[in-house]
Structures are given as C-alpha cells and as structure tokens.
Image (cartoon, one colour):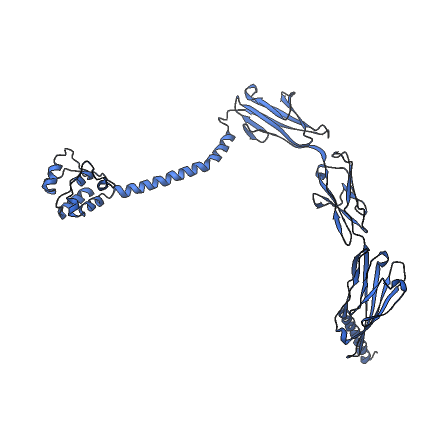
Length: 467
C-alpha cells in the first residue's frame, strides 16, 4: 500500500510542473508563422513579460531546414551576443536586444525554415531559473505578378456541343494559388466545371447558357495577390421560353378573342442567340399550312372562321434547335374590347374619383350657404330697423348715384298677404298700396323704410317673415 505522504509529494510535483509551464508561456511569446518577402528583411520578434533589469537571460537561436540538421545561429547573454556559430552566418543573422529578438537583414531561399529559441531566465530575487523554448516557422516568397488568362477556343461556342478551356499563369510568384471568378463570383467545382490541381486551368464541359459572363483569374500567395483582366464568354443557345403575344383582343390562356373585322398582330418571342427565325402555321381540319415566315403574323379576322388554330415554330440556325407553341384565335363581338376597356377604366378611375369628390364638396358648400342665407330673412329686417334714424331717413337714390350705399347681398323672400294700412306709416302705405301683387318682397321693404319705426312695426314684419 502506497503511503499517503508519497501520493501528496507526487501530486505537488505535478502541480508545480503545470504551474511552471503556465508561467513559462506567460513570460515569452513569439508568432508561430512569419511570411517574408524575398530580398527584404524580417524580424523574429520576441515579446517578454518581465522587467529585463531584474532578470538575467541567456539563450541561443537555431535554424532547422527540411532535410538538414539543426544549426546554431547565435548565442547571447543579457543584451549582448556571445558568439556567432560560423563565419557564413555572421552577416546573415543579428541578435536584437533587449528582448532576445533575431533580425534577418535579407531573406533568400536558404532563410526559409524553422527557427528555435532556447532561453534561460534567472530571477535573482526569487532564486528561480526558468527555461523557455519557442519555434517560429519562416516562409520566403516572391510576390505574384499580374496574371494572364487565355480562352480556348477564342470564338463563340455552341451550347451542349463544345467545351471551353481557361488557362491562367503568372510570370513571377512562388507558391501561387489560383481562383476563377465569373461576374465577380467565385466558381466551384461541379459536373461541368473541372479544375487542375493548382486551379490554374478550368475546363467547362459542355458549355451551356448559364456559363455566359465575364471571367477573370485571381492569383495569390502568402504575401500578395493580383487579378487578371476580364474575358467574355459568349455562347450560342436556344430557343427557350417561346411565347406568342398580342396587344389586340382578349387573351385567356392560349385563346385569343378578337372582334369581327379587326386587324390583329401576333409576335413570336423566344430567348435565343442568335435570334431565331419563325414560321407561322395554320391548322384547319387536321391539315397544316404555312402562312408566313417572320417574327410577326398579321391576321384579318373577317377572313377567318369562328375559331381557328395557329402554331408558331421557332428555329435557331446555329444550335439546330427548335421549339413551337400553339394558340387558338376566336372571332366574337367584344365591343371596344373587354381587355382594352378594363385597362382604360382602370387608368381613368383615379381622375373620375377626384372629379366626383370635388363636385360633392362644392355641392355641399353651396347647400350649406343656401340654407344659412335663405332661412334667416329676419336678420335682414333686424339690420334695417337697427339702423340709425339719420340713415333711415336718407333719401333713396333710384339712379344709384352712390354705388357704395347699395353694395351688399340682397335676399328676396316673399311675404304673403297684402300689408294693411294699420301696419305701416302713412308714407309707406301710400307706396305699398300701389303694388297690385299680393306679395311684397324684402327689396320693397328696404326701399320703403318707415320714417319712425316702432317696436310694433318691427314685431309685425318679423311675424310676417316667419310666416
């Protein structure tokens, strides 16, 4: 049976080792990979997390190349290099105090590889010695030049019959990786798109309509990237999406209805490169007859029976592909054309709505004004009898010598019954009796203002107006 003290000692040693590893990782940090440019300098920087004045450091830099042994480059103590391993490394590597960094003044192919740092750190105050080991992988590359692309064949190709090969290359650059883009979107491998191992070659087999676009190549390595100029890929294809269209009559599915005697034009449209040719065929009693050749068909409805079937056949002379679509033409009375009427009514409806709204608002305003003015004649009479006496006695000018006195709105309201002599003054009665009509207007009342209006007169006239 193992003693408890031994188990405690082992656990303490294990914990101390983990703590030392954690502390070591915090003392010194270096980048794992550095990508350098051939002919340029490169600094293998070391970042320390302690006060250099409080510690004593000693270490060495080594290089390891593929297939070669580990080579000592430089040994240093604190802020000074102690020795350089060989004469050929003297001007190729420089120790950089105070943090044990290494400078490579000019990179060449031989500078590529793994660089190892072995570092001993002594803390005098704590009487502690810490050993640190770090590795940096260094690559040396040449920047890429502008890539050049080529298309084979250079002419327009026919879909489903030909293949296209794209090639991309650069004059300068190491470890170059290629990527193809169509209309600025990356292309991925598929059944029709095959790439070479380094993606410098793209084969489209067979080419199709969807492959039409602008192609370019992107070349990159660890330190640079460049794009080529664009090349267009044109493809002969079609016809696709064949359809017959017309601006005349009413269409329901594949049936066109037109008015008798109406001249109708039909257009046969398809997606095709180059543009397709069209042939119009009439089908009557299971017999076919070629009517005309061209993109447009002209039909006079009075020459047709009540219903007749037609066929448009599109043909691409380059792809040797064809397509056809069938429709029926029915002759029936539509007036001005139902479809046209719907379109015109839809376009006219906003204007009609605005016009009706304006007329409705105007009518309401006139109605309110008429009610307010014609149902309150007593206001006019009250204004008359409330005039000053001097104004009431002012002589009436039948010739309108002073137009400002007659300015205003006159309301004509009939007052039924002939005015009695007891209801007006002697001067007003003389004028009122000369009127043969049984009705007197407000205008007459205004012209014959009593010289001395009384409260009885006012009340009487108001009652007559209300009646």
